[in-house]
Amino acid sequence: MTTRDRSGEGDRDRRGDLLFMGLFMLFAGGVIIVDIFTVLHDRARFGQPVAWWEPTVWEVSSGLVLAVLLPAMLWLIRRWPPRPERPFPWGAVHIAGGLAFSLVHVVAMGLLRSAAYSLVGGVYDALGPLGDWPYELRKDLLIYCGALVCYPLWRQFRARQAPAAPQADILEVRDGARRVFLPVGNIRWVEAAGNYVELHTGEEAVLHRASLAQMERRLAGFVRIHRSRLVSRAAIAEVETKSSGDFNLRLTSGESLAGSRRFRAGLLSRALDPAAAPD
Image (cartoon, rainbow, N blue to C red):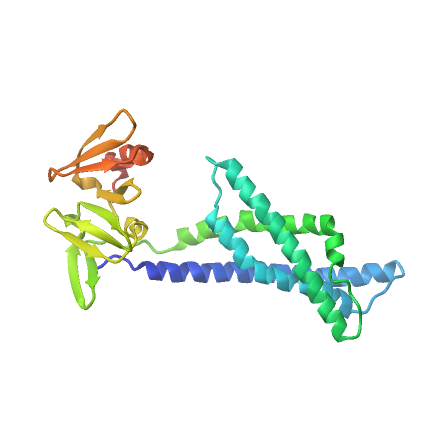
């Protein structure tokens, strides 16, 4: 039995994102249709009727630019998810992101409208929407905030729907054409080594092409003690804290590992708490 392949999770995440974007744009399409008929009705009502194609160009150009910008918007939200412990940097990033989204949206849709009008012999000021940016900004920030709220909730929902990962007891390590089947229980600690990780079993160090973050996700029962080091909870015999907040671990094998104070709280709350161990 091998650990679950993270590429499968990546494919599932991509499918989830595509589904979210599809639903988001489906909703946006409904709003576009309503807006087109609203403009036609209001213009006729106030004695300023327009041809049907004009509000169609206005609204569809906005929707097309939104569809193009949506993946970048979601990337930024993934990169900076809600962080209660760091509200100010998080808020600054998304305020800047919302302003940038609105500015690009307004300029791009003006250019698209100008091109569409020129095809039918009409004239449209490409920078006209930019002159009315405060009005457009309110709508764009509403769209951005909607994505900022809904997308993390969507990802949480998808994560809850994901099938539970099977408990792994054998790790398949590939070295070219050679394959090593390594019992996970034999691994005491893992250390980053460039594009590889070293899997330490006490008898040898097996080189495996993977990132430390991938191994942290794949190996149940391991805790991070340093930005470049993981250790098996079961292998920890003693923790010695230094005055600086950093610490040393003594393993049941007698090996000693240095840990960073950044990860000390997580180590003490998870690694040595029996209730935190996986079922």
